[in-house]
Length: 129
Image (cartoon, rainbow, N blue to C red; front, side, top):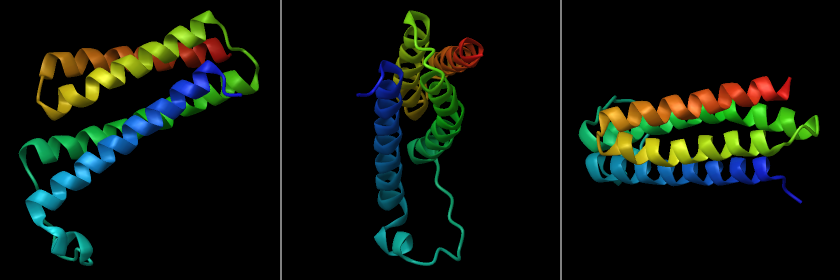
């Protein structure tokens, strides 16, 4: 059975997957299916919401690269607690706010959400020690 932290990690993986689908859809709308199916030797740039989706996806992948090891260490050390579950929940909630805030260009909210998720991840690493 999944621990609460692992369930949150799985949910976050789904959020990243949804972000990837949205990003790919944006690229398809801006650049066309022909370009996406090509070898992409010619570089094309996108702007606006599609570019923000791209950056949100990249940031989400980095966040997962930090969050996942913290969760895995906690689970492997059998160190799950109310605090670790709360930090994982804060991380997920922050990322659920971050992604749409980035996509729609809500700058202050995006920054606060990023900070909350990052702090929660750092606390998870401290709790894993």
